[in-house]
Image 1 (cartoon, rainbow, N blue to C red):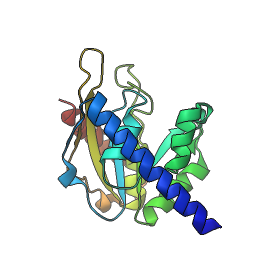
Image 2 (image 1 turned 30 degrees about the horizontal axis):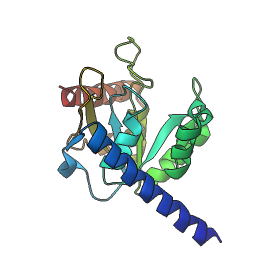
Image 3 (image 1 turned 90 degrees about the vertical axis):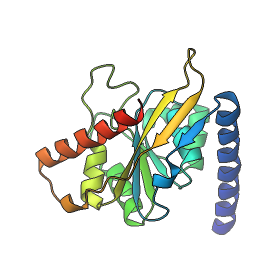
Image 4 (image 1 turned 60 degrees about the vertical axis):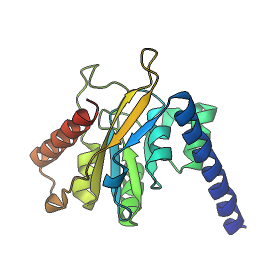
Length: 201
């Protein structure tokens, strides 16, 4: 029974990913760049700039790697987003508090050589709103030793419908593995965000 459920869910995931990919290619004329930069195996943390609800599905359907998104639990209230979260095993996070369960699940995913994805801005258009960049990506990178793949997303607006997503070269912070120094986390966070911003130009 469990095996059957996995097969059904896997099939649904394949169909949904394909449908979303076609939607982006046809409606948004999506251009995908830098796929050669994505490691084909091993733990990876995907992170990009966050502009709209389109960003997570865009990354999920174009990266060619299975990934689990960290998403605020409020998204589960939206039927469509809740369905996507179920299909792609999203890790729901409680906002404005240290969610130990979500942290453990994310680290477990990375330990199993799988991928997670999150946005350093923490919220949509965080930089434009003047909000401080969150150190979640740096924390997971330093704690796990997983490589970080930055990505830049641009377009998808009324003025410019065409969407371009660019995956940058993987960043390796394994030399800091286990380090709990706040200055190190801040340094890594800034470097990651700088790479993301460059990819949006």
